[in-house]
Length: 374
Ligand code: GMT
Image: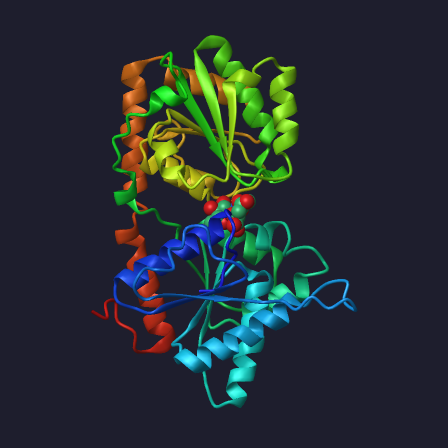
């Protein structure tokens, strides 16, 4: 598994997939520049290889791709890997292609599976500085998957793709979300509704919409807003909350490792993103039985069903989003109905249902891997 180790969804998905494969008895090697946030390197069958980039004063930009390709080559040869599964096209698919070519010269053939996650296509990848390299890496992967139908379509629209792209939706490990938490008091001592947002606080997440929607909600019903994650828009959001006079109701919890516990005490999840290929954070909220108020961007409607598991609205329509939020929160019976539907929808994306699809792919790519090795 080659992935970003940070809080972003692609790294989370890669880590959860690797853990699942390891539990099935496969040896899974993670290759990245620091330990992925959700990875427990003491688990059986999990190996972690850190990519070191030599800091050389001549270079203004250190060549990470080179170090990554070299690491892939060394790990593939030493551990006789069956395949390389790279998450996020930039620069992982490109580095994997180079590694594959180098390995060929050693008489070692290895299939590359590339999973496209979102901004590697819709934002960064389409930039002219990267586009030819991204197109080439997609077309030269042995298997390409995307995490939603919408992202598949975007990829076909943006790039000249000559490969088939298979959609394998993101998944969630439902067992993690069975917690019956009794710690609501910590954040909502007066029984306030707990509204949550999790992201890397980049521009595409429209953090100011999150704060604005919450502002309108708390005018009508007692509520607190929990903001999980770190990123460039965080300080602006803190300032906005102060300006609106709601700073005491908005808690910034940073990069907490207790995402699951926080979701299990949440009443509503907000995801008003400008772009979102899937919305893994929303799926995780739904697994905890939390209805979602979101934009209808990209692949979100494949996950959040309007009027059933929450509501979707046009990007920027904070009026509709706050209205719909109150519609769910202000009637307990209705709220329970949405909670149930959210959980049922998450079941459709459970690890048990989606995980085996990756095994099928691996089998096709290698011709010999079976679902379980133990
Ligand atoms: O959304 C982010 O900021 C992180 C980003 C990533 O690649 O780590 O997430 C993308 O991949 C996730 C996992 O497949 C998807 O659930 C997110 O929707 C997607 N983000 C965007 O498309 C903006």
